[in-house]
Length: 283
Image (cartoon, rainbow, N blue to C red; front, top):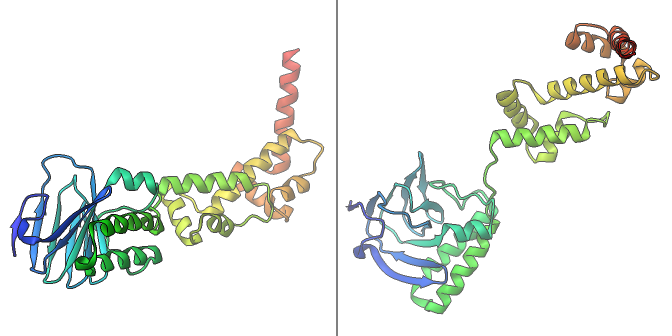
């Protein structure tokens, strides 16, 4: 295996290189190689390594991916990475990271992740890269510029960047508050609105807040009901409980006592007595 510490592929590895619009296409030879890149300065480039033949391994940022025939992976030029390839042809596409991010904000650009097998959009991009690789001898420089433009647009079909757990929880909490007044609201409805499974969202909620979706919805409903017990004296306990999704008054009373250590009726009396005392004191 050849070992180099420079960011650019050695001339011995290159079959062809073409500047194409905002990017650059580099066709790499079939000989096996190993590259360990430790960049000395920032270039702001995003690299796509596509494999038409053979296999390879790419590692960056604590991730490691196996590259099989017909797949590709992203690599960022401004951080150390390792790339080793067995015998076979491969294509390197360089694009300014800022251009890709501006064109497709939110797209998943995590490096050292094998792509082109599971996600439909990534399969399209992988197919384009593979065809460009195979048609090297037939593509003019003008063709290459057009091809890079097509790939740049197709990147928008790739998956979205995974959402951080905290952001996911914040979205779930906002959705709950928005729909809390719907007595029919169920935890599965919140998960469905976010496009994830209830099991996944329950796990994220438990990790971030220490409670499940159902427990959080129940707690917020009890808190809303408690607020109305003290501010809407003309409504019965049953009416308030039903408004917040509790159809059984006995069940509501048990849950309320478990959360507030008192019954709804006693809570209401204490709240109203406190309010009257405040008014009397103000006089």
